[in-house]
Image (cartoon, rainbow, N blue to C red):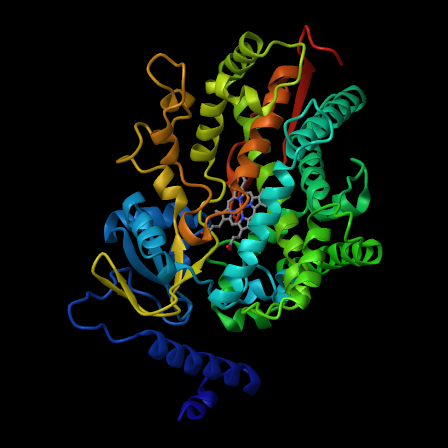
Length: 521
Ligand code: HEM
């Protein structure tokens, strides 16, 4: 029947026609598969009417976090859109998201089977793969305990409370030297390019026991192109949902695959090196500790979840990837906000001068005495919401939320940006105002306000690097606020518009930095 209409489609070739018919049939079957019957007592999800083939793709636009926020005002905290033929449930509202991710945590803890995720860490990513719950949970526990023990390990240097503090303070010194040198040579610096190497070196130190020079071309070629990665894995990438699009040539996808290949072989080389020099009595870093775990597990006949060595040691790939991009994006946004609000930058420096002074490096122990800095970091997280959605989730079984039926395997987007800009939760949500997090006398941070900010996800999939990330952002910023003053380029307006992706960055931007008086170069 479908073939009978082909002669009427004039210039379309037979293969193009067949492709179109196959797509329509596939779309119909997928639609039928996903359009599950709603059990008695539950309601069908509301949402905008989808177009054939593309669904609601056009309505997502270039800022899906804004368009889905607008839809949540119309359809409520739980609604459904369709991308291509595939339904996606969108969750908004602090209470609803808490209910889904904490109270019903197991039911919303899966990851959907998305095309682009298959290329990350050769399909074996802890964060992006569709691993069964038992396998994912075991890997997550391993990753979390390795991160925690290596970051909080006591430093051999008595100046520092722990290894993380030592790494960040030392990288802060290198960063300062580098920024001064670039300022001298070029008169300005790229707000992301140097910060990202410093942050990558901290996680490299913890995972691989080594650091790289600011001009190391291989590291630079991996860490400065993360926008290509983020664009493809951002929620709502059309090719993840519409199979026919994968047949079209795509420069973006080519870059994404090549970046993943280079990233995987970079890590593989380091891991191979670690195997060659591994010594059970001298565990140097997280990679060694994971190799050690593989060795111990071979002796443990009672271990019930079987993981391959590759899946265990491959955890460092996730830790390194997640560890450099997110924290450097946070720092780069922080520099932009300081430049955009010079009076806030001055208050940050003044607080540092009053509470820590300019003669010694600020440490983790100073955090409680720097409430304005902490409030600034919370406001940067909230206002930028640079991770507008969590990584997509999926329902692990048929379930319900707020009385709506949610079928097993359906993809779920969690709109963190909506929560951080919800006028029900925040006064003047679009103004940048760190004071909103301070007590009336400005002496401390209001913890319960701080907990309303959502950037690390919640529940079972909540970020496992949160404690490292928060401390790293604080330490780097404290260091920079103490030593440098940042400025925009004269006559160049500051462009703070975010570029959509899993993590959103501002457009490339050059800034200037000058040493503060009273601090040594
Ligand atoms: C400011 C910095 C960071 C932010 C805003 C952030 C945010 C997030 C978010 C939103 C998720 C997804 C949660 C979900 O799917 O519901 C996540 C997952 C994850 N993060 Fe982070 N992250 C940061 C830093 C880090 C660091 C430093 C590491 C490791 C060193 C890390 C490791 C991970 C891992 C492994 C996952 C996957 C967890 C899982 O799927 O079970 N993150 N992070």
